[in-house]
Amino acid sequence: MRTLAMIKRVLQEMLRDKRTLAMMFIGPLLILTLMYFLFQSNNDQTADLAVRNVDSTLVNAVDNDNIKIHHVSSNDSAKKLIRTHDYAGVMTQKDDKLQLTLQNSNQIKSSILKKSLQAAQVKLKTHASMTALRDQKQAIQKLQQELTMVSKQAGISPGTQASMPKQQKNPARNYSVKTHYIYGDKDTNFFDTFLPIMMGFVVFFFVFLISGIALLRERTTGTLKRLLATPIKRGEIITGYLSGYGIFALVQTLLIVLYSTYVFKIQILGSIWYVLLINVLMAFVALTMGLFISTFAASEFQMMQFIPIVVIPQVFFSGIIPVDQMANWLQGIGHIMPLYYGANAMSDVVAKGVGFIQIWPNLLALLLLAGLFLILNLGAMRRYREV
Image 1 (cartoon, rainbow, N blue to C red):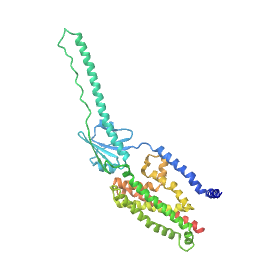
Image 2 (cartoon, rainbow, N blue to C red; image 1 turned 90 degrees about the horizontal axis):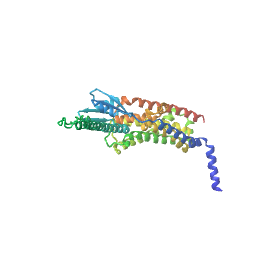
Image 3 (spheres, rainbow, N blue to C red; image 1 turned 180 degrees about the vertical axis):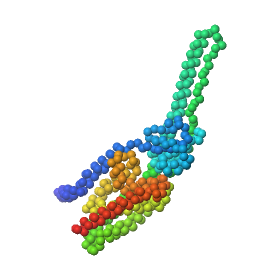
Image 4 (cartoon, rainbow, N blue to C red; image 1 turned 60 degrees about the horizontal axis):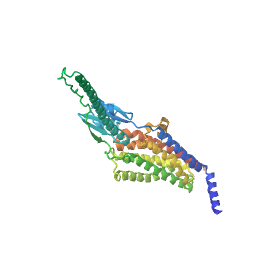
C-alpha cells in the first residue's frame, strides 16, 4: 500500500506539471519529425571539380550526376583556385600524368572525386578493349570472306592470299595519378573533418547547461528574488551573471580548444586565435541563451528537458548534414541556429585557412544572437521583479 501511495503521488505531481509532460511526450516527436525531414531532403552531395589541360575523353568519363565540372584556363596554382572558388578538387594533366589536388575538408566530396576518377579510367580501358574486340571481330569476318572467295577461285589464281586488315591502335591512355591534399592527408578520416564542429558543439552544450542550471538554482533558492528587492538594476544583475559565469565559460573554452588541438593533433590551416575567438563567441551566445531558457524551467529536471528541443537540433544544422542541400524551409531554420554560424566559421578557419574577412559575417551573426538573448534576459528580469 505504501508503494501504491508513492506511485499515486508521483503520478499526481507529473500530471500537474503540464510543461514536463509536454517535454516528455511532444519533444521527442518534434525531434523525430525534424530528423525525418532532414534526411528526406538530404540528396546526394555534389563535388565541384576544376579541370585544366585534361583530355576531353577523360573529362567526359569523369563527369556524372555527383560531379560538377569547371573548365579553367587560369595559371593560378591548384591551392589558390580551391581557396578562391571553393572547389572540392582541381585536376591538371601533363602528358599521361594527372595531378589531383583535393581540398579534403569534406571527406564525402573527396571520396566522390577519387572514386569517379578511378571509375573513369576503368571505363576508358573497358571501352578501348571493347573497341579492339569489335575491330578484331570485323577483321576475322573479312578474312573468312576472303578465304571463301579464294577457295572458290582455286586453280585460277592460286597466288591470291587473304591479308589481315590493320587493327586500330588502342586509343586508351594509361594515366598515372598523383594526389595532393590541402587539408590533412590520405589517412584523414571523418573524425578529423568533424572535430572542429564537435569542438564548437561541446563548448556550446556545456556552457548552455551550466549557465542555465546555475541561474535556475539562484532563482529556486530565492537569491535572485532578494537581489531584485534591492536597488540594483536589472542590467547590473545580468552583467554580473554574464561576467561571473563568463569567466568559467572562458576557461572551459580554452581548455576544450587546447585539448582538441594538441591531444587530438588537429591540423589548423588558419590562425588558432580565430579558433579561440569563434569558440569564445559561441560560449557567450550559449551563456546568454542558457540564462534566458532557464526562465522557462521550474526545476533542474525541466532544464535538462530543454536540451533535446534547444541544443540537439543544432547539431543537424552544424554541417554534419549539408545545409545547402536541405529544403528551403529547413535552411531557414538552420539560419537561426547559433551553432550553424559557429560551425561554418570553425570549418572555414580550420580546414580552409580563411582569414577574418571571410568569417566576419558568421561572427557578426553570433554577436547579434547574443545581443538578442541579452535583451530577452533583461525582459525576463522585469518579470521576476514584479513577483
